[in-house]
Length: 235
Image (cartoon, rainbow, N blue to C red):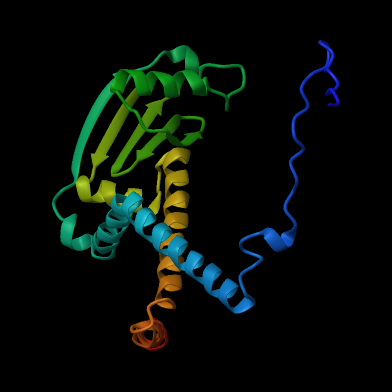
């Protein structure tokens, strides 16, 4: 009987070499072309349904917000009548901020910061005008305006604050007016989400065999009505 050669103590065990299966052994490649098309077609329908469902749920609040505020914005006079509140405040700022070597120059950062701190203004600066006699400083936010007129000789100011109510705040948020960069990005993301929800829903209609024709007809009629309204009633 022939003896098997003994492996030396320093030899490491040899791992079996994994063989990459040829393309003919790939389960997808073994599917006939017509069934392969059906396979990917079903996968596309699955992903379209998944995307439409979860994007709709994820962006539900955003879609509802822009839908409701679209109505309040289109009929602002229904909701904003009598809701404006105006208050006036007076005070004095440091005269040195208005007495600089350049007659047109003032200490703009200090003036803005002082008005925001003392008067509790949380909105950003909208406008700052300077002439030989006075400064005009404006702060604006959603549903909110604050305008200060400052005498350059005395440093005295008069501030007028206008608040326009909850609906005005919602309308300004819808338009992205005086809302800052953060809210502007949210509007962009919301537009992308709603576009994906619409496109995934449009994709799904092609997989609903019994409702495909009626669904496409409804889409065409809706688009046609929008065009007719634009062509006939929009000046």
